[in-house]
Image 1 (cartoon, rainbow, N blue to C red):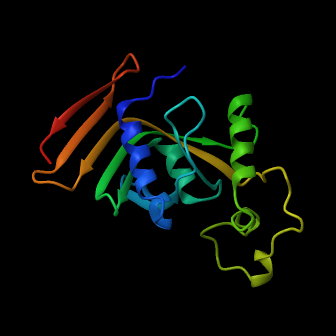
Image 2 (cartoon, rainbow, N blue to C red):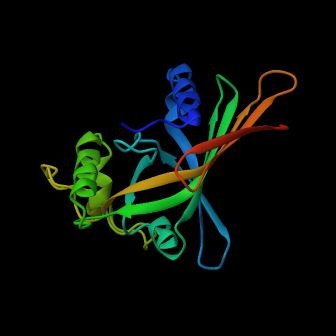
Length: 194
């Protein structure tokens, strides 16, 4: 059985205490463009991958972020919870799990992510290429019915944190703890000035 790092319980508590806010599942994910400039966008948290600390997101294989990850797999997520006034920054390696990854467990995880996706979210993976010239409205009509099997553009994106910065903005002074994954896989935490 996997031992959860200490930051996981703080993140779970923040998610629970902010669950009444629809935007509590949205966070910002930064990657690095080929020219070295940062790229940032909002993504939806889809839970943790089984038996790991990897955060799950879904995206389109044809999106710019997937190309950026191919060039540099480093990424950082920033998550702010307004109700509890706390921020989590999670930095680590991103993995793109596409169609037939060659790993049975990862393919099953991708399939599960497709099954858990809402009927309103699935059609976008049948749309024209993101970032391309605007297509006519008819190009955005999804197939009927939506297939049970995920289409090739649907990918699961995993962020495996190596470093977590938890800032609690309540209190005077505020509390801030940095968590770092050690070479042996354990986590070390240290309190720092806010």
